[in-house]
Amino acid sequence: MPDEPRGAAIAARSGAGAVPAPAALPLDDSTRLAVERTRLALERTLMAWVRTATSMIGFGFTIYKFFQEFPAREQSTGFPGFLLNARSFSLILICVALITLVMVAVQNHNEMQAMRARYGSLPRSNAVRVAAFVTGFGLLALAAVALGP
Image 1 (tube, helix red, strand yellow):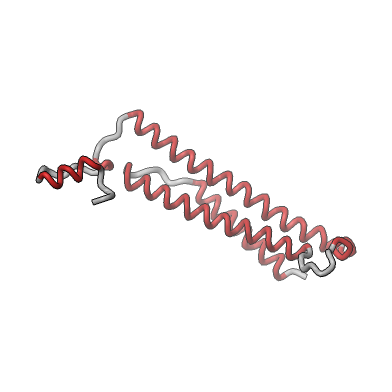
Image 2 (cartoon, one colour):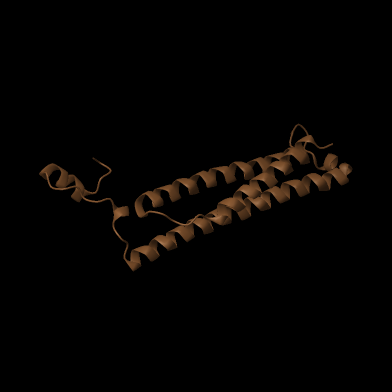
């Protein structure tokens, strides 16, 4: 019984009736507003990560296209014995952005599930849809860089 509140564990041992789960209780205004603030903070955090990932995808693709137009510059900026060229750097940026988006989406999902389990139904977020759209955009950019000339 480690996940139960202390009062529920005492009531269960004493033979008293079960204590209702927190989701069964109506929330007072201050608790409801606190839950809403927490949910909105989760959305803002997700959108900040989406913004960062979008920038990384955009920078990666731009670097690739820039050096594709000016191949002489790429050769002159390469380090001897170092395998990182513009295409590799672009692929790394885009992959890091995509991995970050997936990790953040999973974390957001887990946090929202925990809040729903404790406080009941919460509205669905459009931020998750935006993250999915940016992930698709990133996959297209990744394919363009990886399969491009």
